[in-house]
Length: 267
Ligand SMILES: C[S@@+](CC[C@H](N)C(=O)[O-])C[C@H]1O[C@@H](n2cnc3c(N)ncnc32)[C@H](O)[C@@H]1O
Image 1 (spheres, protein in one colour):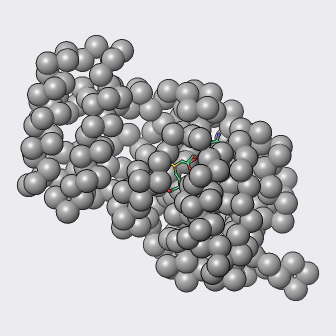
Image 2 (tube, helix red, strand yellow; image 1 turned 120 degrees about the vertical axis):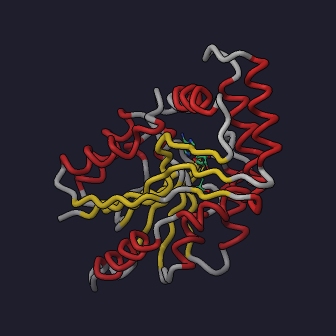
Image 3 (cartoon, rainbow, N blue to C red; image 1 turned 90 degrees about the vertical axis):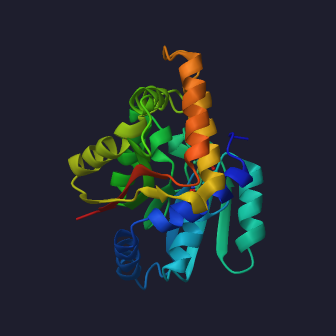
């Protein structure tokens, strides 16, 4: 178990699909198309922190086919769900494994290592170790939906900035990889890959949420409220006001929450 429920991953998936940069995803697939050869005709994507298979679904919707999907996750229940949903139509190799044991990740023969909504959870040390392994075989990287620390609400509330500052501090909490990079993850991953000579392209992929995303917005607001409630010096009365204002504003308000997608190709 890793603390990500099927219900939460399902809830965010619509917003993730809409947000994911389609140009970058299509470039990743085009690169994959020319990467396989007659010696190793299988095209292999290793999806780290795969959950129930969101990356598989997103890239399949954009035309990915004949892929061997190696799905890696610590949470066996999520992998079982991925297999239940896709095991008949796709070639899936599932690996229940802890990503932090980098040397044992099943990367052999991989053309692309992908991830969605993962890299803001990880530490600098994890990225350093992973990039060393990827560089050894010049494996491409496609990492989507990495939180960037920006969240803009409409209508505004006077506590928005303080809540966001506290939330972004909380994003650095250890999620099992050491101190998390949180909003700094995209810049860190970009630099680590560029230092190895990769060609890195970034595209923004913000969630753009409105009243139609009521269930997701409700969970998001409750999640932010819970994350910043202790240890960040916010007045509990003011914070309660903020939460009630935000929940009441869902019906006519908007929320833009920033992410970046990254594609790194070996030269
Ligand atoms: C935010 S979820 C994203 C899931 C999926 N990629 C998606 O977009 O729906 C992060 C995923 O990383 C997995 N995870 C977290 N820490 C992990 C670890 N140490 N080893 C393997 N998987 C881990 C979780 O189980 C979860 O499935």
